[in-house]
Length: 435
Image (cartoon, rainbow, N blue to C red; front, side, top):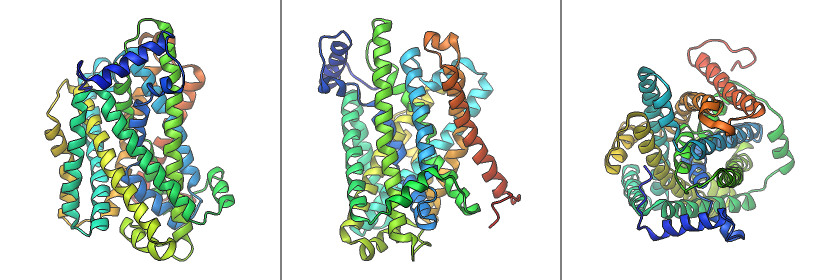
C-alpha cells in the first residue's frame, strides 16, 4: 500500500530528515514538520462531504444543541486515531494485517466484508459531495460532476507512486483550503458564541430525528477506514534503530494526532454553527446541500455560498483519495490481495453512480451512508482496543488501564447509539424520544 520508491527524492529527503531529528543532529520547527503527515491524511476523513450533510441538518434543525455530539465524536476520534498510529509504529503492521494474523478465517472474512461495505459507503459520500459542489458551481449535470471528481481523484492518486511525502503534502494543502474556507464562513456568519458554547457542553437529544442525525455525525466523524489507514501510514514511515527513537516517534505522533484532529473538529463545529446561524431561525427545514447553497446567497451573501462550494469540492476530492488508499490497505491486509488503483477506484465508486442514475436524493444518500459507516465502525474499534491492550503484541507500549477504559467507553457509546438507531428503524419504541 505504501507505494514508495527508493528513488523518490522528496520521500528520501523526508526519511533522512526524520532520522537526523531522531539522532539529535537536527532540530527546530521545520524539523518537527517532517513528522507531520499520517494524522493529516487521516483527518481528511473527518471533513468529508458526509459531514457536510449531517452538520447542515444538525445546525438547521436543532441550532447549536447537537454541538456536544460533534465534540464527543471528535474526542473519540482523537483517542482511536492515536491508538491506531501507536499500533503501526510499535508492531510494524497495520490493523487489518493484525486482524488477519490473530482472528479465525471466518471472522476475518466477515470483518473484510463489513469493511468493504463501509468503503463503498465512504465513496458514496465522497463522490456525491464532490459532484454536487461541481454541479452547483459550474452548472453542470450531477453525473458529469461525478466523472470530473473521478478523474481528478485518480490523477492525485498517481502521485503516490513517487513515495509517501508527495501525497502527504497534497492532502495537507487541501486540508488547509478546507480550514481556510470555514474560517471565512464563521467570520461572515453572525455566530451566537454563548449559545454555541452551551451546545458543546450540554448533552441533549430533542427527538428521534435528532438521534438519527447524532448517529450520522458519529459515523461521519469517527471513520472505520481512517482507523485502518492510520496504522498503515505509520507502520514503516521511518526506520527506527532503537527504543529511544520509537518513543520519540510516538511522542511526535500523539502531538500530530491532537493537532490534526483538533483542526478537523473545529471545521465540523464551524459547519454546524454556520448552518445554525443561517438556517435555524426561519429556515429550520433546510436539509439538503443544494438548498443550503441556494439559500446562503440571500442570507449571508454570494461570498459565503461560493466558499461553501469550494470547500465541498475540495473535501470530496481529497477524501476520495484517502478512501481509495484505505480501501487498498484493507484488502491487502485482510486478504493479502492488491489490485490496481484504477480497479479499486472503479469498484468502490459504482454504488455512487448507481444512486445518481436511480435519481435518489443526493443529501439523503449522504446521510444514510454515514449511518452505515457508524454501524460498521465497532469492528475496527473493538479490534483496536483488543490489540493495543495485549502485552504480547504491544510489549512495553501496551495501553494503560485509563486508556483502555476510555477506549472501551468510546466503543460502548458508539455501540449504544447504533442499538438505539436500529431499534428506531424497526419501529420499536424509545422512551423519551417519541416523535
